[in-house]
Image (cartoon, rainbow, N blue to C red; front, side, top):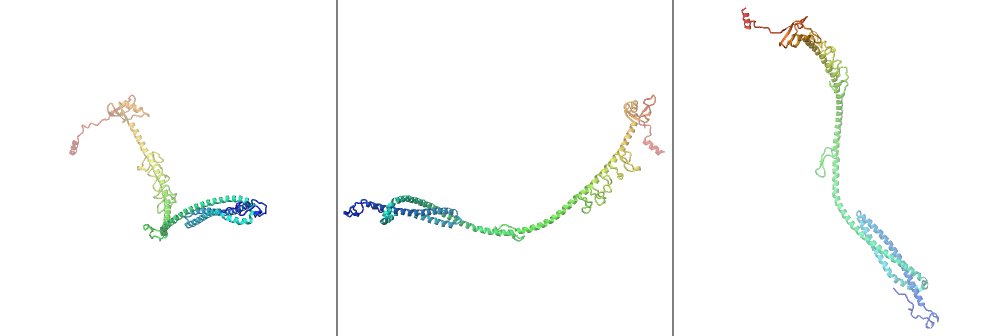
Length: 461
């Protein structure tokens, strides 16, 4: 840097006219110093102008730094999507590197500008000092202050430029990472391509298999792409299902008909046979309400179970009577008689009324014959007294009974004293309290002829 002139450095300087002074004999001291001050002021002004230019350059560098930061953000974004578009990632990485180079260059320019400022300023100041030294002197101090301020700003801008350079280097690192990711993405893309080929083949096989499974002709078997699976198509099964549906409909009609028939056989009481002479179970059980002989009720050879069990107003089938009638009925037409009549008697259960028959075939109830037996026993009791120790005891017991009984000739009792049956030959009367009783004895046959003698006599005679 050129050093400004200093007082006392001017060759031939003089203070008086005798020595060739400029102002005669008047002594003017310090002019060289004033000129030197003007030169210095001009240099300062030039330096300030350069600083202003550098400020403008620094601002431009800051703008570029912002652009670099924005590009770095874009690089980060592009790094996220680099797997989707690897080529775009590479392009953005190149852009980031370019901006990083620009930042480095601008930073160098800032440093070089600081060094050139003094040289260019000195040359410009020297030329300008000749024409505007007096004008610059009045503003030199102000410009010097501005220069100091601008120098500080320039230093700040330099620091900002350095920060931008660091950011650019970081962006470059991110770009390199993005490039690595894009390479990995390219590898994955190749792998995906390798997988896509067999997948496409499998998809084609699946499509062909699906077509076979769906619309292969009915009842025609096929083999799928795996070479082992065989079968029939959905179309074939649909045809079978349609046929089955038709058969099912027919079977349904038959089932409904059978159900109706079964219902009729179970519950119909219309008085009309279900088929032929077959009536429903309910008709055979409780009747069908028919009165013309065509149904079950009171029809010859038929009759319902209920009538056969309980009906007592006539026959169950125009011939036979019900179980109840045979058990306890009193119908005159039932010539066999009921069990109750045979037990108690006929004609409303009158014991002495015959149950059935007339004349020599008259038959009576058990009650009648029991009564007759009881009467016989009573008659026998009148004849046989039982066992007693004496004739008097037997007579007193017989006549003292309730009601009192009468002793008759021929009455019997067993005499426990004589161990013999005795019979009455004379009834008690007057003072004879017991009458006359003789033992029943066997006839003595010792004087009778023998069988052989009798036979001989018969022959002889």
